[in-house]
Length: 389
Length: 73
Image: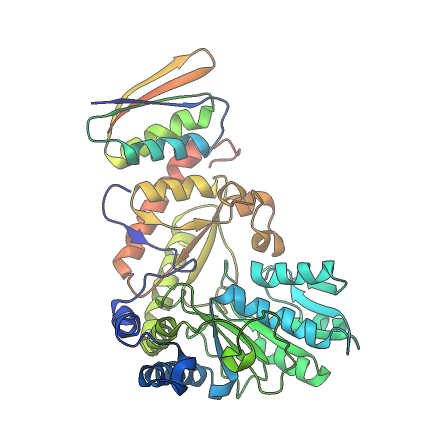
C-alpha cells in the first residue's frame, strides 16, 4: 500500500505485457481503419490482414480453423453469445433444457438464470468436494429436450480442471451442444478441439497478460448458434460491432508469448505456496484438487479468521490477493464455489486465493507465505470466531 | 499537519480497518488519523496493521463502550 507491491491476483486480471502493447501500437496510430473498409482503401486492407492474422494465431492455439474463431469484448460476452445463441437457435426446435454446473463463473450462471426467466429449464449440477462434476450424473441428466451443456474447463476460484474431454464425448454421443468457459485455463492447460469434441469455447486475453476487454469464442463449424446482437455483419455474422483490431493483435501477441516453460514456472510457484502453507500454517484447508488444477491457482482456507482481514493486512504489507468471503464481495454473499464444494460459510469466509502470473518470482512466493503466516497468527489471537489454537 | 477524524461507531470488521486504510492512503506524512469505533476486534486489529506499516501508534483509548485510536502517518 505504501511501498513496493506484489500482485498475486492474476486470476482476476493480469498486468499487460509491454511487448503486447508494442504490437498493438501501430493499430492505434498508423493502421486505424476498420477492417470492412478493405474494399475502399489500402489502409483497410492492412487492417483486415492484421485481424485475419490475429484470428489465425488464436484459432491455431486451439487447433481450430480460422473461420471458427470470433473476437469479442471478453469472456462475459463470449459466454453470453454461446449460451443465448444456442438457446435462440434450438429453443423452438429441439427443446428448452440446459445443464450447467453449480460453480460456473457468473457469465454462464447468470446467462442460464436469464434463460430460466424466459421459459427454459436449467439443471445445476452438483460438484464433489474438489469441484468435479459427476460424469455419470451428467449423462443421466441429459434428456431428449436438452440443447446445451455448459461446464467450465478451470474454475475461477479454486482452479479445478474438469475432465472436459469426457464431458465433450458424452455430449457428442447424446448429440447435445457443449460449451466450455476456458477463461482460466486458456494456454495454461491443453485444449485442442481436434482431440476434444467441444462445440464452443470461451477465452479471454485479460488472464494471459493481454489487453483488457478483449476475448474470443471458438465456434465449431455447424454449431447451431443464432446472432442476437443486431448491427453489422462482422465476425462471420456472429457478432455485430466494430472490430477491435488493436485488441485482436494484442490478444494474438499475448498467446504467442506463452510457452510451456512459463506454465511450468507457474506450477512450481503454486506448488511451493501450497506445500509451505499447508505444512507450516495450522488449521488450513486446500480448496480444490491438489493435482488437477490450473497451474497458476492456489486457494486455501485459513480457519478461524476472516478472509477480508487477511487480504487487507496483506495489502498493507504489499501483497494483492483475493478472498471468497462474503464481506469482500459486492453481493455480500459467500463464494458460491466454496459453498458448492460443500464448504460452510466459515470456510468461505476464511478462503484466500493466490494466483500467479508472468511477473511473479519464487521470492514473491516465500515472502507472501511468511507474511500470511504472521498475519494469520496475529489475527487468530484476536479472532472472534472461536478456536484459536 | 492535519487531523483526520473517522467515525466507524457501530461498524464491524472489516469496515473500521478499510476506512482506516483509506484515510492513511490520502494522508500526508505527519498527519494524525483519529478513528472512533466500537467493534472490539478492530481495536486490536488496527494497531496490528499500524505496526505492519511501520507507522506510529500514538494512542489507543477506551471511552465507555467505544474506543479511539490515533495514528501518525
